[in-house]
Length: 525
RNA sequence: GGGCCGUUAGCUCAGCCUGGUAGAGCAGAGGACUUUUAAUCCUUGUGCCGCAGGUUCGAAUCCUGCACGGCUCACCA
Image (cartoon, rainbow, N blue to C red; front, side, top):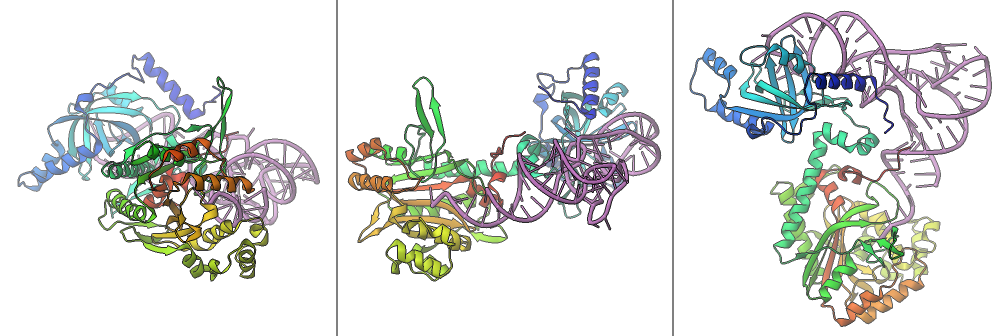
């Protein structure tokens, strides 16, 4: 409550008080012309159709017809984003959710009277109005609504950073000194969305991605479920959690770091295919691909394994790409690469991938010490990073440092070390390896999946092994999960994918912050 | 956490190197203009120059520290 009004804001407050004194409510509860409403896009489409259906005419007749316009009365409502007043006539560009349309008003019998025009001239960029009238085409060819009546719907006090736009001959729009400072845009996302239409488009795409994923799983017999976000024991991933507290119970709770252990309990319960789309919370650093809370998709399917999940993941990606990109070729552009999401994706073992990009065949180094020595000999990691890492973490490090960035076209990497995958089933005949894959696109890890471990005795061993380690991200053993498993869990395949990264991929954004409506920022001073 | 860069008007930015007390365009205000579209033309206001300290007769400018941000490295299955 300590906002200091700027000079512009004080001017607008004075204007607002003048309106109130004149008996005009600057924030009316409802519109007057609601039943007549057309969107800007509908109006433009209607005018094009009307124009095309005009009969054969002389040029003079045609000009007169365009000027008179379509006779139907309709109303436009939205925010004023540009204003061009000249004497006793003027235009304001009105933007709604569908686009922009200009409203024309002048003093005259075909439009509004002098008193109304005085108020019209007083409008500010950012004000919401409604205007009623008929649609016509100006002599410069612009679809326009000729106002015969209009009202203020909401007065803008603080000036929005609305940029001027110039239509280019090729149809594109050139924006001058747009609101572009990333911090200001994220902190005041409302202003960003208000003045940068392409930002709104990112979030429409995001919504379409999520809707399409639901369609995909719903139509394949998956049940959408919701599991606890507040958990007494966290697990299902290697990450540090956020801790919170329940006052009445005097109990510490954790914000979930994954859905995995709860979803697999549901397989014990008899649901064969479940999925959840929701928020995970991980107490770790922020970066261009990490936010403390992020949206995750996980699914688990009884009687599937790592390879049938791989098939399903391919099908899913292809489905979403075609729906979302509205391009039947399923291609997207990301960081300057054209990426083809159509199946089949490349499949390569982790061993072969690391061999290809580092020259190291880790199967030749069966223990931590020999692998660490080889990595140092090849100068693949600094010594202080190598120190203290398990063999599995070293292998994972090689993947992250030397392989991931090269995996631009969709690639599945499979066969992972057991000690970094405590919830995955071991490979038959190769106890150091588990049935797991990760999907990479655009040089970025996108998803993670495995044949889920359903052997309660093996799972108990894995929890114990983890506890013995010194990894501060190790998950605590979950006794209740083991109890569930002992009742019997069907063999199943599970899958997790970051929706934020998927959205980055489909909207060609380098930063996760661009695809989160309100990304985490340090507190404002 | 490390490195680099940045923070000047509501927005986008110049000025800093080479210290002399702050500028442009847009937005705003006043005026002209009854089909404009980055409308145009005339007039005009606008600043804790991120914060704190230091050097200096004098600091937006040089130095130090801090805050915040961007990029990057590390960390992040």
